[in-house]
Image (cartoon, rainbow, N blue to C red; front, top):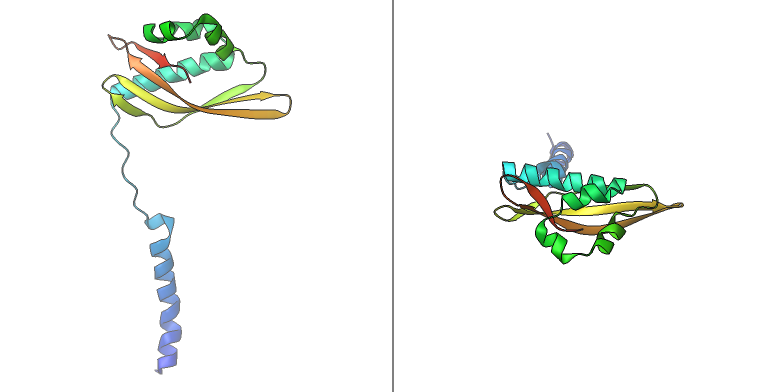
Length: 140
């Protein structure tokens, strides 16, 4: 076999191997941190609060606020936050534990009016207020 034949047979395999090594399939990602029951409860509280926001349900939202959050915001601010004039939705990203019993979740609040959608990028902080009772400590 001539050198030219060997090169013609070998080069396509080398290109294929290099492409596979550089592909996203070969990339190694760090494993997600283990989830604890506190994370799950905090995520559920964030979801309940944002469902209340989506439905414009101020009363349900107020119940989910921590004492600290209620002291920090006025009733007018909360009512303005919950007022949705059109369809709305939200996205909750992967949260992180700030300290024991306190989690922060990135959120995107999406609202539509007329033919235009608007996104607001923010975060929500959820705290354990005791006896596995979770509350919103910082509004998005």
